[in-house]
Length: 401
Ligand SMILES: *Cc1c(COP(=O)(O)O)cnc(C)c1O
Image (cartoon, rainbow, N blue to C red; front, side, top):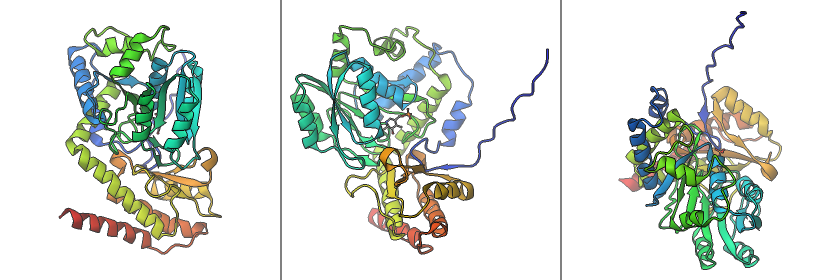
């Protein structure tokens, strides 16, 4: 037998992840992933599953029994939520103002739904009137789906009016909270959200690989009332809930190491406390925005509609998008995101999610931009951005003491 040489080892380069995800992962989470496996029906693993469900309920702000991590990335959570709640012919209202609303429409259409898009320009919220108009076009709307934190644009979608309007029409209210969960309040029960899905690699600061979902009583009733089988075998919650529930019926082998990681990441979220965690995300975003504006840059989303965890800034005219991002990566080891779809070449997306959201990271990025931007045709004063950010931190600590 001939022995072919194996590839070289892969040492990942040093990176600070300040893009749209994945975010920085805490060493405790990385360490958890490197611990030995147990079987996926081992009593120890079953105990971990139970604790994971309990911690997920706390983070989602819900009492929903059916709260579990789907094996797959955030998109698997998206697909699981839709294919379990949609039967062919259902009318579904979807807010579309970015990549993820567009993806939701695609998946819903594939599942046989008639999609009624509530559209808004990329970079703006979907206004309540637009959702009302979309609902008025439906004979019997099955659900209203909104993206809480549109990571492709940095827009923070308000939920209260849509939740009320959906329920007035006897429709389910469903949200994508992939980027919001763990970074800002989601409050599933208090906000009257019937189903929600998330992902691990945004503000939960885990590697990508699991998608927490939660289904409330009305969504579970819909699941029970189905007259057709769920289109996807792998994502069928009627089977998955038996694996994650009392019965422990084998469905698929849970990705053990990813579940270790999520468990540890949730412990970190709860140790910090929800209020402190949200305040941290808010403060670091405010400092970043102050710094970027002091440099003469303009935010891409109107004040009052901006996410704390994903900050979109306009690329100044004449500045080469790719060249600046490449310089950040090569010289400072910092990753930020470019724009998507119609915003390609127009915006940079700066993620301050979970472990990535720190004052040190904000000042490190601002000082890198102060050095790099002038070389690419955008004059800005050295130290001006960092100083503006530091004023925000100083004010915050004065207010706290
Ligand atoms: C990242 C993201 C997703 C998709 O998650 P993947 O892990 O990339 O599959 C869905 N919705 C939103 C809002 C996201 O930010």
